[in-house]
Image (cartoon, rainbow, N blue to C red; front, top):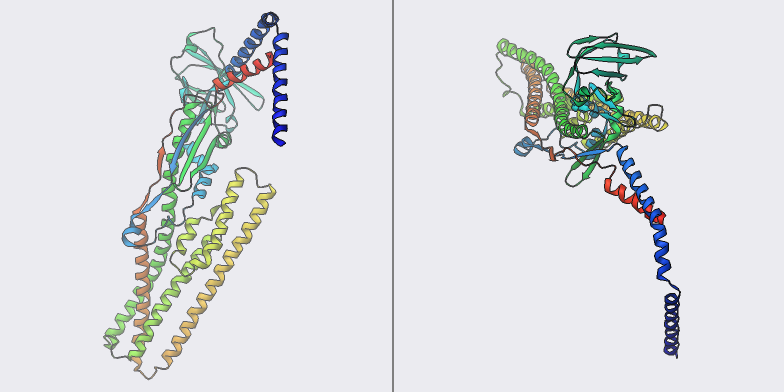
Length: 524
């Protein structure tokens, strides 16, 4: 029963479809269709031509944007760690996200700008578009000396009368300054002095061409504000530790130079800042070594004088128990003294203004100590907050509520770190005092020893403490020096930046297709 109903429904639908086709064939008149099409061809052609004209006008008066890109792989290698199994000074603290934020920062961009010819920018102002010549300018400013900083970032207009003379004028604080000068000769104004050199160019040979040339003496902050939004740094691949650096600008050569210089400058800066951390540790060790060296020389002199005056050669005559106990005391006190000095140095490195706190001053001191597990998490949280503060300052001012809240959190975290260091320092000093008290009590039990031998034992013990401490500092200094020499930055440029020839915007074919598609839909 069900199959019969389904077949009946299909037959009815098919018959209805045949009837509609028959009616359309009877009602459609090919002649009328051709007549309407001929009447509409003119309008269709007019719409299509208007769309093409609009597309070409848009492409003609829209400045093309070029993008150059480079890929950088961030890797470090320490041959000293591989050969001598010692701690390296930079590998443990390298975070890919931290390096990316560093490359996005205005501090890094300032270093890149310093490497490029941005002291003066050259422009040709058109009726709609303004072209920046960058290094392709046919006129150049040489031997520039700025007498008044108010000229900075102010357009200085030029009109050349062939190659023999030019007129220069600009406006500062509502007052216009102008004059006529000769190329290659020193010109002096109230605000600056320089020489203008000129190369051969079609603009100089055609007196009918209207000139709208000008140059601008750039300020550092102005350049950073102009180019910071155009520099794009992102993680390309976390596993491979690759970073993509790209820059967009209307001048393709400028985009290329910014990306290529940024990649090279980061490699140089990475070596500088990591070497600086090892330098700080070595300076700390040197300061401690100089202090201990003086105490060692003093105790050595006292020991030598005592031997000569009392004819005591060594401690073999003393009770073996006293010797064993004294040696343990020397080792324990040496380790405690080193821990106390390290904690003091870390407290000093932490108790600084926010921008001066550096992970390469704090984290290397923790490596290999008993406090690494206790303090590393707290210090890493502080450094993470400081990194977030630096990132937010690139987007907002110090009046921003989020920055104010973040700085309060940084102050709280900084106090937590300092209080932790203070408590650990207090405990270490207490342990040292307790150790000294126990040793003093222990020595009191051996007053029956000959007085001179006991005095000799004390002088020699003091000498051994200073000697062990000095030797330990010397070993650490040598280790850090070897580690510093063995540190090889394997940061590599995997994809070199190239000069872009095709703009990323506007896309010529895409714009034409869009306008033609819009015209077609309107015509229909």
